[in-house]
Image 1 (cartoon, helix red, strand yellow):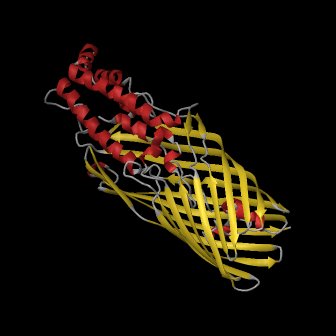
Image 2 (cartoon, rainbow, N blue to C red; image 1 turned 45 degrees about the vertical axis):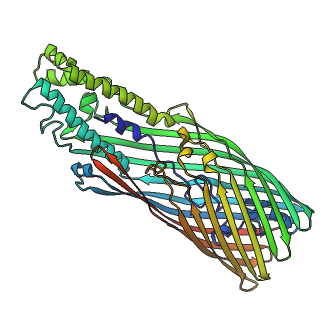
Image 3 (cartoon, rainbow, N blue to C red; image 1 turned 135 degrees about the horizontal axis):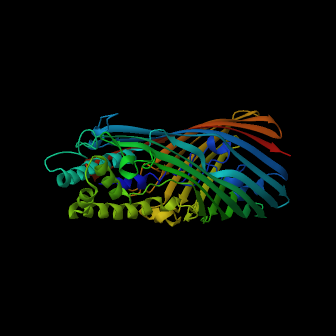
Length: 510
């Protein structure tokens, strides 16, 4: 019987990964100029406070401000197939589709720069990672798989007890109790919220009219919450709480409510070099080390009193106490109980360790290298290409999950921008994101899939000192399929996502 697993795995709740563009914990779309163009690593503009801070030094003297807001819609879809799903009395089919919805109605960002002579003093506020809430109204396939396997294990235990207590008959394995087919039902829900707020300060300096450098630091405040439950578990016709504590109807329920918070700092370096109609730029962000402190109110059932409760069931059915205790003490039954509790204690410690109250866990943001090239064949036309590399395998996570990746994330992008007239600039862009995924790394509680993003938009010049950016981009994800062997045969998973972002921003020169 694998009852312990259902209590354990539920607590490995979804880590609401970035609902935006970039790596696992990095949002690179921190300005609407990115959404309509994508390749901003070598572009010169106020959005460069994030994407090309050294290049901001080439803006004219004075203050420059950019106010941005984005709305993000995302679905996370997992299709599962498992033979034991046929035992779900409410949905007796082998296939399932679990859909999680992530919605971030308002994702703000602000960039500010003050240029004076050869200096550019800059600041950026944004949601640098995460930025939304993901909700799975029906839980996840991995949860149902464990419930299904638990039901099969429970009926096996019922048969073993009955073989000792009522040879040739049925009690626990009767249709009125746990049954003998592995039938089950349950209710499950989960949600996760994750925000990595960032505030950066730095300065760029024009070493020569064609060369500038930048140094700065970003303070990161991480704030997350995970909430979920598994309730109303029933095997056959017996509510599972009756096996743990018949006096409490929630004895078998699991509930997680965990807040995490932490602070980290990111040193940033940049360089920009102009050569006629060409521009070359690079930025390096160091790894952000963050320890997340847990503040949790969790409910975790214990199976330590399972033997006592089974004795109580026998006594309630009219079996003398001494006889009931003899049944439980029988070596086969007693050995099963001890093995069950030992494995439960081990698995629950492994599964919920990340969310134990008062514990600190790692949630590093990986280092990032961004390089770009821009070329303007004529004044009205600008062409850009860029490259990102995230050192994901060096950014520590809980239980060193990063070691399961094959490599860091790679991104390629390209963008084109054209001044249609004095009032309107049109642009479009593309970005490919390739993660170093492996079957061992993938899990439905938290996953990414390699993708291509396309975006377009306009910059409306409202006046000589004010411009409005409007953009839309969508991400086209691939599929990542895995398979493994469970108690009931082959367990298949197909991971997929959708992503749509709308944005508007106002740029002001003072």
